[in-house]
View 1 (cartoon, rainbow, N blue to C red):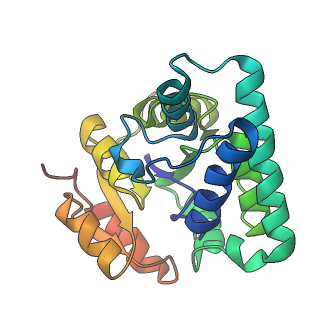
View 2 (cartoon, one colour):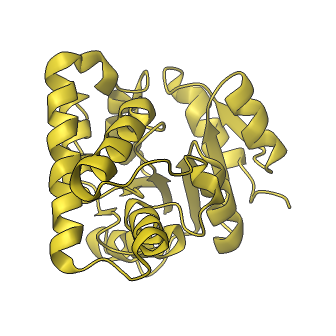
Length: 233
């Protein structure tokens, strides 16, 4: 049995833009933090938890307390909901994502899991709006780990338990960011990139052997999942 693990933002949903806007605004609204680096790949760990913690630590020279974490998360989700009312198109699915997930999980040799660097509550909102149902798939989020590596490993463990597998013969990570490529390389997982134009070039330069624009060609998706390699240095 093989396992395909999917990121969410930029991979299943076209939400990178609205996610960035709301994350930055939540920092300002909740903790009066402005002028932060948006080079997410430049942070040690590219997850909502790790980035918020790093920024907070840099500004206040101490880690955030539980109430400060919650205040930021609440404001972040509230802003996402506000943008949803303004413009639902900001929460569209990557073409073909929903039907692809349903088909793939029915394949005799494949199962699906979700691994996102975002928090579960914000991920659920984005997926619901995009009409992508992941209720039947094991999933791990920023609530389950601080680093991408921890989140993917958590997703694998949940998938083994949920699908009653002692191990998976092949585990493919599917994502759109440089951090996704790096995580796959660290864990020695084959990687399938999602992107086009300059984004595709960036992923390939980072070591991705296979990159697709979307999931509309299901047979091509399957071929790429089978052929994708561990990202090269």
